[in-house]
Length: 296
Image (cartoon, rainbow, N blue to C red; front, side, top):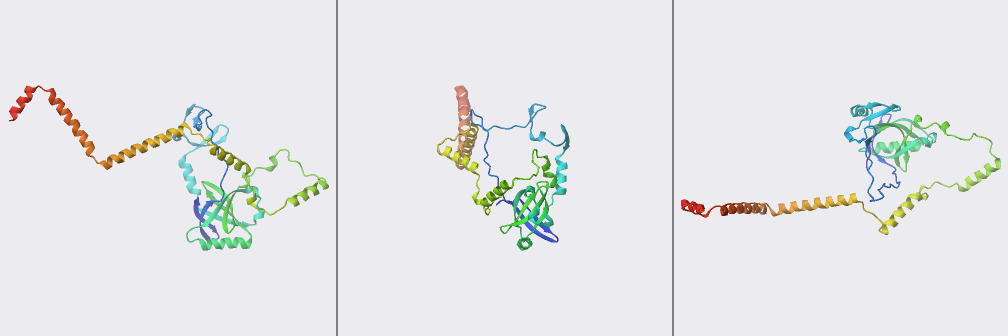
């Protein structure tokens, strides 16, 4: 399991080294958008609508829209400084409350917390204290430059941290349109509804619930693969050709190294000799003879 974050949990004077791991994963089916004609994946380019041209990463800056169409520019240096000032590698428990006091609408994401180096004893102490008191810790933590409210609780002998929305991040329920007012409900209808609820009431077993749509899509994909209905894009083919070419070139270089430098040298000498012979043959015979006599 990949460690996402290292830090500590603190409550009072107790400090516990921990490592954080993602407790959940998104298993939605991810489908690529392809060109119908050639099945190549579609690229989404960054284009400035005003300049009508594609922009590079170096041409981008961060901006906050405070009024429609008006922005305040925040430099990377300013954001980096703020991040360093507020990024504290600790989960600071500030309160202890009952789990049922927090409505599930506030819960965001879950993370497993494991003990860090030399943290097992203090980790066990906090786990047992939470179990015995039947309480959870309300904490603050900074993750990816965002300060988060969180709760720390026990889940199957493991400490779990769940990030929690701040109150102003939960929308006002009064803004939901057409919610009926509480009025007297027909007693017979209410009794029938309660009877139905009682008949369907059981212990929660998460293993009995499945994402039927995701399983159906995966089944269809596997069926098409088995029927060899898969497709290869031209882009993928080109990339594989480049890789094959580079492999062949690299192999050729390695083979040349194994043979040493002699073949290359021999070819160069042969070429030089050929030039010399050609030059010599193009000269008059008398001049060559005189040269020989002179030398003798």
